[in-house]
Image (cartoon, rainbow, N blue to C red; front, side, top):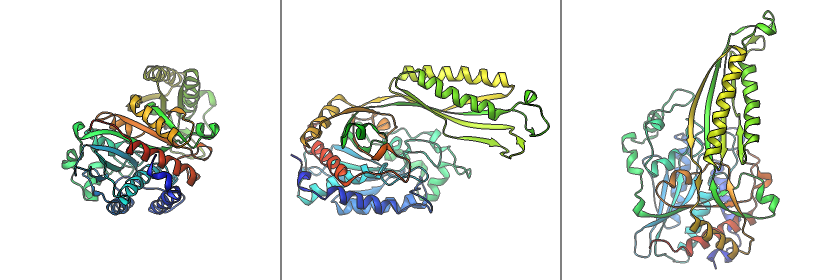
Length: 415
């Protein structure tokens, strides 16, 4: 039985901290907290303070992650890592990422309050950048901890042309020291993350929590189309080289191809036309494509099919096309032992366990390179995420916290 079962206000307590962290944001609707921004600094220092209060040694590491360690009963490790990310998309909600960080932190606070130490240490991590919003990268924080922070991340730039390397220096970090953030596999016994589902399955099933089996693989690409800008009133329709119409056809091809492949989803989330004027045929258009599937072979086949279709559309419309694949992440299965243990924790909380995959990417994808991973989903209202309308209930959060702490307290790993 988890200590949490006597903590009836756990959900409200965690949600209050989500509200407090959510106030650390750029001005505007919802939460906007980007990597290596002033808001990142304030949030990191706030979380580190909460970690200290919960009995942890805490620091901001060389990549901007916040790492808190609650040592074992022998005053050391190895460590079971838990947590999530503290960055956000633009105009986000309060729970995507922070709920996992603050639930993990609260679990440690409960143990500390009861004077309990375990045979292994617990490391709570608030990853600095999972979303990749500012620099159009992903998993930068967990890639640093898993030893995968390479030149592709250092050289990525934001809309102002500031590179990650330059932003790190401005933030007060030393880019040459990022390798020191990496963890050795032999000092870890696993990674478990609690996260809102970001989908409708748990709500439709009437369940507060779920057991994640795998994280879908992702392919992302930027397509650039170049046609001929011209006057909107003087060029006959049949003589135009309009890249925006080609882009529109490609967007429909994404829908058609993804729908034709099992357990695959495709999204065109961004289109930009230049010069973007009401009376000018666009000369250049860029659009993004995001393809996801649990099956890497199916995802690759869908992307290859899309490439063929996009080039055929461009040729037929007389426009040039360039396809730049910017991300290719393999699907990531959760460790079967972790799935079983999380399922047992769900049952101990009095909930019917439901296994389901994650269509969204998570830090566990990077962490799986150095340790076993597991995930707990918490129901969110109507499956809404990446929106100020993101919502959870205190009761569901309390159930998720009970599951996480039961998993931690009963973990039988390498120690």
